[in-house]
Length: 398
Image (cartoon, one colour):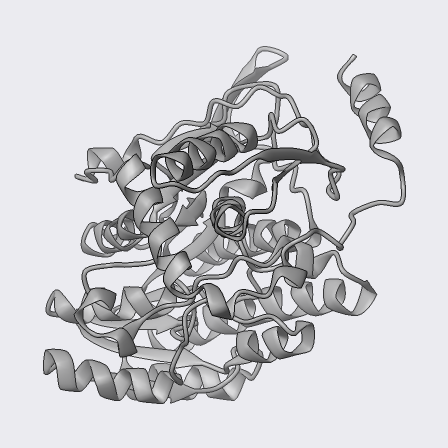
C-alpha cells in the first residue's frame, strides 16, 4: 500500500516508517521538525545522538535498499497538506504529527494555546484535504488513553452502551482529559468522528498507552537509524526517567503516592498495532477506536521493577516519593478494555526484566550525554498544595 506517515521525524514516526517500508509498503513521511525546535527551547535532547531526518532517510535507503519519500511541511498550512496528498496519493495515512507532551501544554499560556491550535488545526486541515483529494484513504490517528481520564467505571473501547430513562443507546465514552494536550486529542476525536459521519471517510483512532523501549528490528540494523529516547520531565516517560535516575544513582522520583495506573506497551507493539489497523481498514463511514496497550502498571510498580532489575546488574537504586506536579488522582480504579487489536492478531511483547536490563545498559553506554538538571519536575499543573488537591478529589468522589 501507499502509506503517508505524518510526524515521520518523531520517536514513533521514524520507526513506523521504516517498519512499513521493510514490510513492502511504499512509504512517505512528512514533518516540519518542530519537535527539534521545542527541544532547543527547553535545552533538552534525546539520550542517543539522532541524525537529521534527511540523513536517516538516506541511511535507510543504503541499509535496506528501500526508499522513503520525504516531504517537509507544516500541517497547519492547508496548501502543504493538500499538495502532499495530491502528489503522493496515499491509501492510508498514519497521523503522529502533533505536539505530544502533556507537561509542555501546561507550562504557560503560550504553549497551552499553541498545543491546541497546532494539534486541532493540523487535524482539521488533514480531514478537509482528505475529503477533497483522497476521500477513500484510511486515516489511522494516534490518540491517547489519557482522553478517558480515570473514571470510577471500566473503560470501554471508544463507545459505551447506556440506558437512560428507559431508552438505550451506544454513545462515545465520556472523556475526562488531564491536560490541555489530552484535551487537544479529545477535540481531534470529535472532529474526526464528525467528518466520518458527514463525508463517509474511514478512520481508526488508536487510543494509545505509554510507549517504552529504545530499539526495534529496524533501528538495530544501523546506529544511524536510531530513534529518540527522552528522559526529561517534558518529553520523557516515567519508565525512561526511572532508568536514567537509576544509572545516575539518584532516587527514582515517584509522583505522589504512586498509585496512578496507566496502560503501557512496547514500541515494537506500537508498530504492529499500526500495521494491523492499516491492513484491516475501517470501512467508508466507519469511525472506530482501538485501545492500544498491552499491560497496566502503577507508577510505583514501575519504579519497583526498575529498582529490582538495576540491583541484579550491580546498580543500587532507591525510590523517593516527590510532590506530584500534576492534578490527578493518585489512587483510583483503572480497568480499560483492549481486545480489538488482540482479535486482529496482536501478539504482545510484555515488559520484562530483559528489556529493562537492556535499557539500563544502553543508558550506561551513553551516560556522558545525560543532563541531570532536566530530569526533576518543574512544570506544575496547579498552585494548590498536594493536600488541597487530595481534598478536592475526596469531595468530588463522595
